[in-house]
Length: 246
Length: 282
Image 1 (cartoon, rainbow over the protein chains, first blue to last red):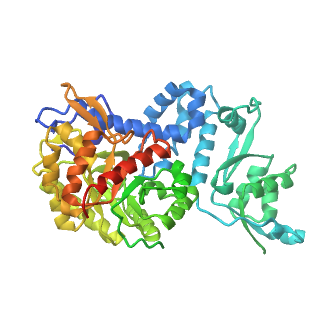
Image 2: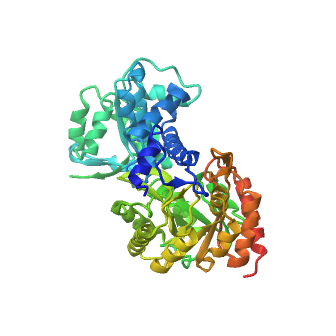
Image 3: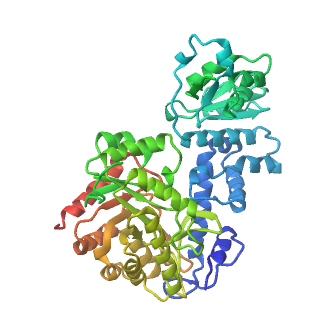
């Protein structure tokens, strides 16, 4: 009897022999026929990673990507049939690969791509009408809580992660400069979009995500924080859902 | 939420791909219904669900699961059962179908439809899993025959008898994939026409058609791969005619999942399906 444990083990490890008891139509050993399943599994998982991480694939080239994906899929199979979320551990895995260490920003670009994907499938939410801010007393505003849409993600990076992503994916984008970048991923009209956040913006949004008041989030953002620019991005991206007054 | 009287029409349908959304909404002819892969619509929101809601207002929808692992040795994943229940509840599709295969083992999802031996033990397991699923989603499912590249020495049932017995025990219906019959028959060296003759044809609620690729095994024997990446092959259309002559008109789906073509190419396949249906009497 061929158990599924045996069948699976040999699927993911081409060094293992084809399990005994698998045959062709005439009772001869299955041989190469088993390789169809090996190939289906490896190709489908590898293609899922390539679809999820197109910028990473461009940055390291198809051959290196295929190698990295092949190693990853043997180490970590999807934890559920929801293939759109496969690869959540891929950014960390890339960071652990010695030959890729010189490309310091690679893992953060992968995190950005995963964030875009999560945003795409996140729950829908109402969009805040900016008119709610009109005529608000400062005291009320500071004590209010701003709701952040479930499709919002924040990437903190010591690398120019968004510039690298744009340079890789959008023709004509400027050459990245050596600077740290924080990114807001928001989803206007169902299309996840990355926005470059001003200094302190990532801390501000993360504080709001944690349910802190507007005033506390301002405190978290630090001294030279550009509130106006950050709010403009949040509104542009449809990232705010509601405002709860104290 | 949507009422399509819980049956698919005996017309051509296609596997829905998001890139065809606008064209399908503008002019779907001759497509009368759409099939979606359940797992692609299990996110929390965004464009996939918005598109599905819009499509479901216009078309009967068939939900086709590719990840439940009905043939798996492990118990069915309760989280996945809950996700299926949720999808079927809000969408109220015209049909739900899954595969005679396994894809998850030891909590690893392998993203392929893997084969199982046809024995008394596997029969009991498959029937129990289908009972459980049908209980959870509150409706009968259709079970699809696999495309096979190999067989199990230990099998003691023919595939057609196995399917018939599963249906008898669970009350489920059948999704007959005619391309899979042709692929399996070629790969395992039996007659596809005899398979159709032995098949529980009265239980067919839906028929699938798709393209396959050609390869060879170690001995140079033909090995067909169920790739869903091209037009349906001529001998598969011929096998469809034999099938429809026995079954009468049935909902007929064109599957095209890799190297997905532009809409007109897929619509052309649906036209051919419509012509095949027109040849048989209701």
